[in-house]
Length: 304
Image (cartoon, rainbow, N blue to C red; front, side, top):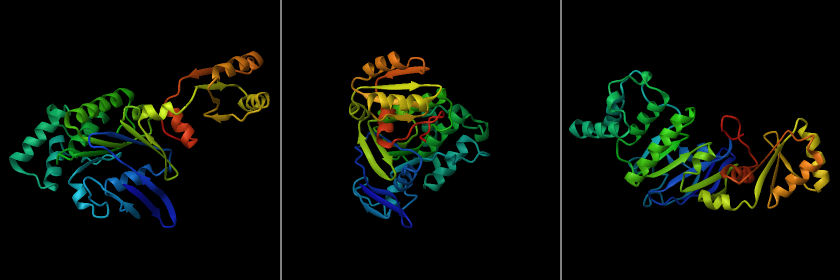
């Protein structure tokens, strides 16, 4: 598919082209304002794109979304459950909306709740559940009509690390057992490294798309990050010494070179009193993200 979308005269997506194989796990990364949310809304049929050239699930058009909605399940970032109803009741009423009823609906709800390990909580009201259990219920709700594609908008946002790990393990099992296609947006490069393919958006444009392994392989050398009590002073001194431009990212001087270890030796020899810490590491998907967008990550894991 090839998507373009404008809000008024502002173009927020520009010819973003996607090809997602059946059964693949596809992750979308991007800083705030990159177009991730707009892309998710288009793929989940909440927005009709301004321009579209698309073969979506066998040729259905995003400008005629009714047929698409039968084939996709959507897990939104913000809760869509009725807090006053029980787990079972939430799924039952969702089933009614999708034309399911009677024995077929009851059997499907039981199977799903057992699959997400919520059958023993079927009579629990939503407000009594933890954040992780609520997210599992959201996923079960999205799977009720047996979609072939599951769209997830930052599904682990706001969850603690243990619950995030649990949710991802569950999603991996779900994909493997059902050959389901997963498309997700995320702020976490660590989570995106588990995907089969990653797209990185910046200012509405696709700046990279490949497997995580291939994207990481594009970065040559190691990553050197240097901290100092007076980072600006050290930054000026290093640029003068090496006659090169270095960036400051997240309060640290960042050097990405084939011979980063040699830079580290020279820096520690001449500027050791100004260096409070130095880290030399192999590149990760986060380094690809930084290289492609110029954006770092804040303490909560979000792009800034």
